[in-house]
Length: 448
Image (cartoon, rainbow, N blue to C red; front, top):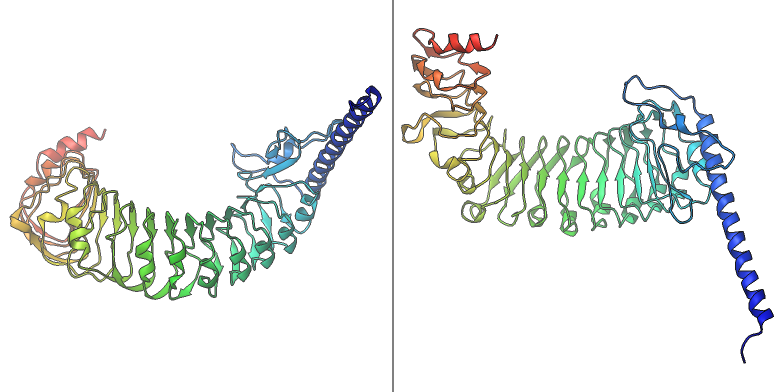
């Protein structure tokens, strides 16, 4: 039986009324959210930044008759519902002088806030427990603030987080176990803090991490094998801590890793690079390491461009160096290399190398008496503090920095005229003799 016209009319009226009430509810919700932001602004004395290109974003927060705050700086709203979904105060250095104890409750207006950035503001004190009530958050940036105290366990309530930056603060103590609940995290940056305790037992749960930065965070102890679960890692930074013990083999199974920094620790063990085909930057300086033999043959590392192995207690040049095809920077200073500098070191990277540091070793000469480096892109060369017993090598024509000081160099210095781009030259502590070449007069004149 077909519905009557009166029934259809009533149904249409109910539909319109429901739409109207929903619209009113949304409008009232947005007005409440805007009012909360105004109250938040009034709660803190605004301080103008000293930087000419930076101003407190909240200065644009002015109430109007419509109660619409979606046009305010740093406020993002949902296109369909109009509700506030994002708040970005980053870059407004020294905007607020206060703590978050009153701020977080002001944000709990019921709106699904998905992003919150306070990066570089002047909030102080501890992170309040109430931050765990913002359960819809996907991005949270509280880096580069003077926050202190412990990270609250309530952060574990933010199970939808994909991005968390709490770097460059004064956080102390252990990272709460509740971090194991943040299984959606892809980006976790905790560097430059004063943490302590064990992190590895919860880290294994964060299988979606692509970036993890825990550098300069005051952690100690060994690295556990938790990284075997973090198969998506692209960037891993654990530098400038007091990590000890052997490097776990699980690190050398991270096939997607592009940037690995374990420098400035007290780690030891074997380095196995033959699976890391995507590696672009590798920093292992200030550790006690060795390279497994199979990397000498198989590890071509086609994307590696930056290699730091300073102070690694190495006695022999790693053979895989000769297979690298795109290396731009290699730093091997403060090791125990002796004998001649082998010519095969730059066989594959002859046309790409721009930076070489072989200083503070026990090198005595050049392989095959080839004292001039035919490296067309080289701009930085440091072979100081060795035992090179030879005439002065001619710097590459593109070199701007050339340091061969503290060696057993003899003879004249005419060969230095080959360095047409030199800006810094150090020939001190040597046995060089002869007159200053005429090319130096040209260089000096060209500076004026």
